[in-house]
Image 1 (cartoon, helix red, strand yellow):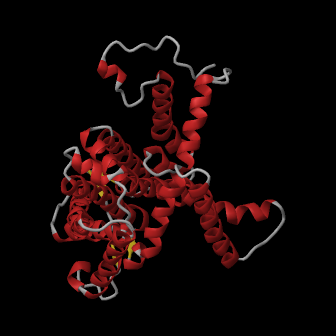
Image 2: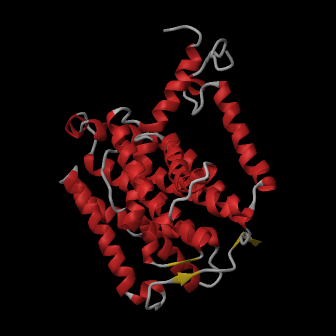
Image 3: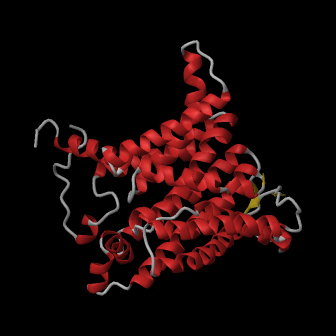
Length: 354
């Protein structure tokens, strides 16, 4: 009975079009943000920050960017890891080559460089789609891997492609402890999540969804396929590039091209499929599932007095991922986000059967 809309009347279009039109949703999101910003930093352990929370926040941001392209615009991409790599290495070059470059500017410029690369590899989407587009974006993965291993200038003349950053600061404040890194990632994630939520509700978001549902019909009613598809690639690549820069700067500190290999691209695609295609909330569900599953596979056998090898746990992880992807594609194509939405709808109607 607590999740009902009785008495929540809207008298203006602006009120009716709020991001969270139900009061309970607004209260829940506000309470969640207060908890994340104020409570978690006080009580969470260093291990929780470094092993779970920071990876979850960054991967959520990357999945958010990929979901805009795949879930909202319907353009299949298998090269997300490449755009993360471009964002990370571009931010690194701006950071080390320009004296006094602010950390935030480096991260955003890394995202802009990823945008340029994403648009270049998104141009084939104007003529091809489906499996052929997936193969075209997969080419970005191999090209970027080759470039960062063979072109030494891109890695500041590091022969192995391995680079590192240290002494990060934001607006004169150090970003060195786990709590500080967590707050930086959380702030950027909240900012980009709100940006993405408003974009998909705007005119350009409706164009993306029209291209996803039926591109020929969208072109007939006046939507420009060139503009819609390339803007989806641009926005997606920018967010993914910023996530890649955060992954390198904040989570890893020292990284090489293997940190953004094809496994990373598939991992992000799994997040979007399991979490929910075409759902902002699904990006968070998918990232949480991907981050927590390996930890649970290592812990659950111990709870029952069993011991399994690391190799077996790794194989079980891939088997469970594959089984869940097949399950969600057959039973619930919209993933965990749809289950969450269905539960909310039932709460709004309970105890009535209709």
